[in-house]
Length: 353
Image 1 (cartoon, rainbow, N blue to C red):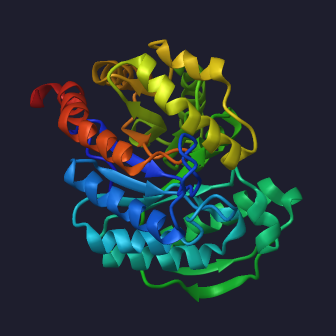
Image 2: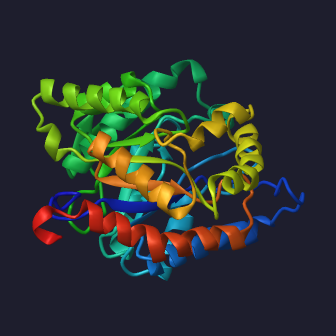
């Protein structure tokens, strides 16, 4: 079953990393229960706004509440009816692929076939020690386990042997998802190496764009498509999702003033270092992948990136850095009222316009 219908417009999604940090303007912080319920409410509002997909990442360090992201996604599945539900990302390196598949196949059945998996390597590496893995095996753990996850998706009975997990001999992996297979993407952080491996495997790519000019990411996308073509896959049939920071305000200067403290605060928590003010100010450049500013600027940036990348999905991170819920709601409302209709109109196939 194809992930995308070629006769549809660009898909628009919303994702959260599940951060649980203080508001840098006020110093206030939600309880863990309040933050988890907030994420659930974000997904409900996203569906009401016409968003196509909601994604939640997995993290196991202080400053996050998304350790059991599949459970939160299950609550979201129960509270929604149509929106696609995805991890963003599931850390395959420190999880058992059999358990990942069991969890997400079950979630797919509960949601009536709306579930996807994005498999990632972890940009926040504290979970390796916490869960008993050697960080020196960072690359090898992911590649082996991601390959096994893909094999499980293809085959109901598995015989397999590797380095980091006990062998499987004619193991019956159940339950199977509604359509027998799940859409499984590979998370790529911007570097060409991981993109090339995604292309070689013939899997969709979910590309995180944390800042800088769009042209930087065009090279990664080109490398992905070239590697898929060289491996014998039809690169035009492999969808690409791009995602990054999103914030709407009355003008770009207001957006930078309001949002930068959150981005800097969130970056410190997520990766251990702040976000350069100079780099963030690059958002004023139409070529920047930071989709912040007033409504028309954001629409033009998303369309510019879509024209350059030929991506099938754009995913906005709207709750980064302890952003208060009224601002999150405002972003989702504006996205639904003004931005999504414009993007859908301008990216619709010609015969549908």
